[in-house]
Image (tube, rainbow, N blue to C red; front, side, top):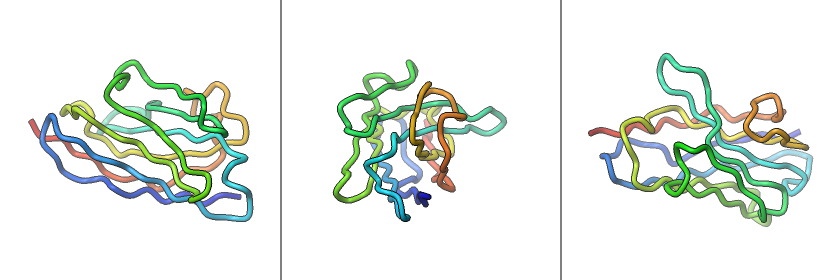
Amino acid sequence: QVQLVESGGGLVQAGDSLRLSCAASGRSSFSWYGLGWFRQAPGKAREFVAAIRRSGDSTEYADSVMGRFTVSRDNAKNTVALQLNSLKPDDTAVYYCAAGAVIWPATQERAYEYWGQGTQVTVSS
């Protein structure tokens, strides 16, 4: 099992950057899991943002964040990060990290077994 805790959210202005982090703990080896980031805006369904495979050599992004967000992982520190650049008001949401043994398809919530509690990101115009 894996426990996930996100941090790094906050209130920023459009065009600013944030770095979200997700720390993992538990009995299972962190490197066994693929990791993903999702977000949920008020009144909307949770949506896929980015994913990174076990070794970190393969990533996937939603079209809406491609070129602005970057996902990375540090298996030695049991952390996954999401760098958010050029933020827009539409990026306002609660951001969740998730872990799964086999994250395929990575864009689907059902691929992930473990979820964090989320961290709020608010982007003002």
